[in-house]
Amino acid sequence: MSAVRPGVQGRRGAHGQEIAKADLVPTTANLASAYASFAELADACFDWRERINARPHRETKAAPVDRLATERAVLHALPTEPHTTALGEERLVDDDQTIRFSSVRYSTPPGHVGTRVWCRVVGDELVITGMTSTGLTEIARHALSTPGNPRIDDEHYPNHPGGNEPRPPRVRPRSEAEVAFCGIGEGAHRWLIEASATGAQRIRSKMARAVELATILGAEKVDTALGLAAMAGRFGDTDLAAILDHLALSGAPSDVVYADETHSAQPGTSGWEGFGA
Image 1 (tube, helix red, strand yellow):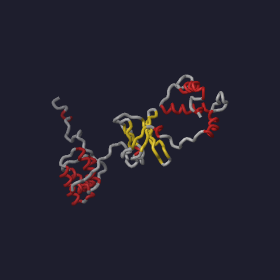
Image 2: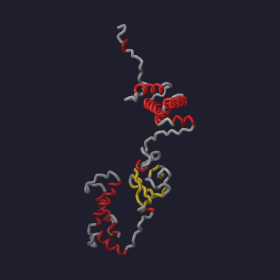
Image 3: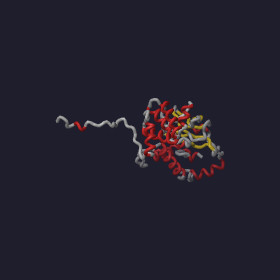
Image 4: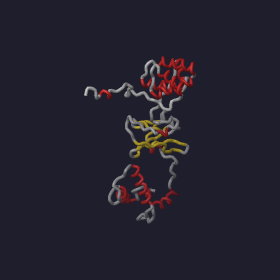
């Protein structure tokens, strides 16, 4: 049994360790100058183990992998599941599908909220193991991070498009006036969000005016005008009425002119450049 462990071959364990160092430690002999990651080193160890265990032993004249087949007849069977101590430190998955490890939040896939998982550091990564329908399985792997920099995998939140991107504000009308305004349509929602974000003045009175116009002209027309006003950043006292007039005369615009405070319609003074020369 011990013969299948890398670097251990009975009484010649020290010699096996020398072989391992010669094959694995970056030297000119094995043409390895360095390892790019811990995972690459682990793969090299695995390849070395497979190669050394297939080599005939000097004393038994048999390869360790062949001797293992004979020894299995007298060995006790290993448990189907590893002891949790080998899986790392135990954590409880919070309602937001994350666990805390070394003061850093790491996300987990759906289906593990409220369950226990185990975390261990492998090189520069955190491996999270959890119980699935097939038994204990690695459910997530993250690059290690530092406090204040959580590791959140967007794929762990399939029902939340955008992952870590900022969520668009949601309009939650409370008063009757707000409910009436938001009932105009999606354009009204967009107008309210943009107007609030830009610090527009007298928003409530403008909302009330929009509701009056929707009653007279129809909610669909006013909703379209509110959406255009939100897109163009036009939240003045007369902007909504002006947009409605334009739509009545010209129909839906082919493009939208965005409000830009850096531009002015005031004539320039370039015509005066030659005056008095």
